[in-house]
Length: 580
Image (cartoon, rainbow, N blue to C red; front, top):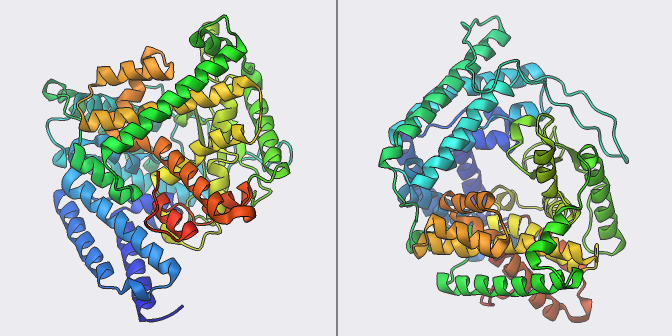
């Protein structure tokens, strides 16, 4: 419907998105707006203050629109956009991530997108990559200028590790883009592009800078790469120099934690209530895991049963092929059992994780909502390294035991992130795709793990055990996030909590606890899953005989990825119903 309110909102949306991309051009580039390639944002105090003022003006312009006269789609987009702007303003003015959390600022200098996707000719991508590298020293100089001199110790240590990794990526793996050569496809899967070979530099050794020349793109790239690497290493040295002043003050507090939930997820519930729900879910999952472990081997403790399940894994040289076959099996099960629509015959490409991304166990890399050329989606699985000992290889492969690999593949690909992505491509709201909610993206994928077990996929008890281990990990994230940021839980206490309740060894438990210090919203995996489960129950009651699991899933995913409480209103028409 076109009327003055809708026209005002459309114009406001266009202005707001345009201003957002101007402020964060690296984000726009990742989303597929390649006219912003090569640019990094300014994060000077003046720039951030201007952005905060701009956000207030944008919110005022949205507030002036008569929402009662908007179309249904525009009405919900208006609410999504308003919440997103409030969240950014909260982050700039109150959370002040630029001062306290270098991890939040890392994304703008992670430049792998220029070499991962063939969205433009290599020379065009090379020029943009070089330009972006040339902007890295200035960006880090601004970041040092706005950063606080006292950071929380766990956030500081995580930042040192992450920026050291960026420097190693620049030195070792970042090359000039080239046309990606296809490898033979399997099972009708689209060909996998091969990534460029690493440069001959050695990790940890600086690349010798070369004087730039305007008529030699390769030399200009090498000079920019060396300068950017040196700037990142200098920034790491600056972070290390802050160690004597670091403290344990990572907690953001109840008020700001609640505000992040309210604006990011549209969840406005007492934190104690959310904590109680998370603890109840943890108890249920622990009890169920104990029951399933006993059904596998009543003579062993749950921990011993978990260890025996972990020992059943693919061989190192079969990991990628078996994962690809597993995805095909899951995909066929979805179709044969009418669980959710699979909107495309194009498969995600199963491949070894590129060397510059091997900090990840497994990951899905799909294109942004504006991408029109390089639309491939990659399901990366991290293999063993050739130089590892046999014992190290075996330890790594236990993480890819068949039960866990199925759960992870359901989460990342079918029917998790990849199916969600395929549905969002036809969603009629760019706002809901650009400003997708953490709790929807991760909640859906985590929900899919449990839902597939409920729907009878891979009915062996080992697979239910693998799913429950993933659920316990996410339960612990919810509980520790709230307790660390609002109730004084220490890093050591959170580490022990993960060890005791998620069956993690000390090192991964510490890593999980560390993540919670700089990613307080990682509670959204469980929170999103529980909201979807509650929505499914209420949708079934509302639909009666017309209900089917496929109808629910297709309806849910048709909206893109706005906050789940908003989707709940769209699906049930009852804004006052309980979300949990």
